[in-house]
Length: 114
Length: 309
Image 1 (tube, chains in turn orange, red):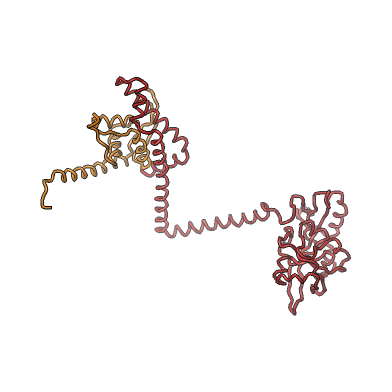
Image 2: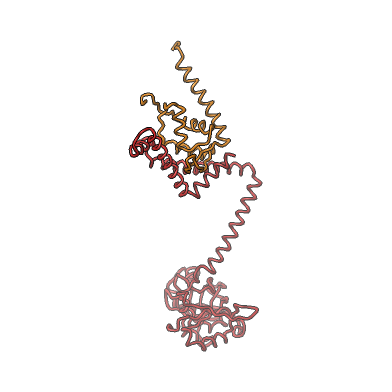
């Protein structure tokens, strides 16, 4: 599986976190697991790097956190997107799609006069 | 309500730095345990599962540091942003700004003034030598709790408490007329009893201070001691004035000394230009007899230490 893994593009981690949380509130470990599952283990996310990102997003007011009890009766910090976070997700997503389209457009071009 | 969330988070970081750290630790611990559990379920032994979980996580200590940084840096950045926003709003609403600035200025000014007063009268020691041994004596009456004493009362007090206080001094402030070089100058002067200057710690930098031997027969011993300030101002610090004569309120006085630069007048008369013996008060002040009755002002306190003297 190692050769199929890819480095996560700079800046996309926050986008992925926002997307994940838009489906349901999760604790940090849950987020990392969900991203791995959804990306079919393609992204090699250093799990620790999730937490500074979560803190930054919280400071920006995109997500908030609260301590809840897990299904196994453990206390864990759950993250919930704020309305600002929901708007940010839409914004980052359209930006992402524009970038991808542009990169694809370049890659697909057949070349022309130099 | 983005700013509410951001503000709350900032406040939390500021007020609950330690608590935020503890919560972060609990969160990271939870993560590692969950990951190890996942690996155990995949067939790894407990020890290997813990090891792999840590490996996948990356450096725990570095993550803690980065989270803290994300908390702190944000606070500062937002502070700068808030300050800019504040400045912009103040520029926009100038009327409000003027009112606010003036209110603040008045408030700060009033507080400064009150503090200066409290500092000078209560917090700072009075400018005397060993203030802890000095007491002030007042005559108290229902209408005036801090009344002054008459000279006869002072004399009675002095003579009746010799076994209690090592010395009792008194001073009365007045004005003196100086005739010099064809000009006339009115200066503030302090008439002091023989013990007064040694009591508050006024020493001579040249010549000698006025002492008990100077304060004898009324009108009979015309000597004067200059303060350092007046010596500089009136005589340009000329050292030869000691021993020379000075025409004071119509009489001829001998300058016996110059007070030290650190002036210790007590709190009574910081502006005094010169000291004369109490026995010369009437001559200097140009009064006849009145001060012996009820004009008396401000006795200096007696030394509270009966062993000294």
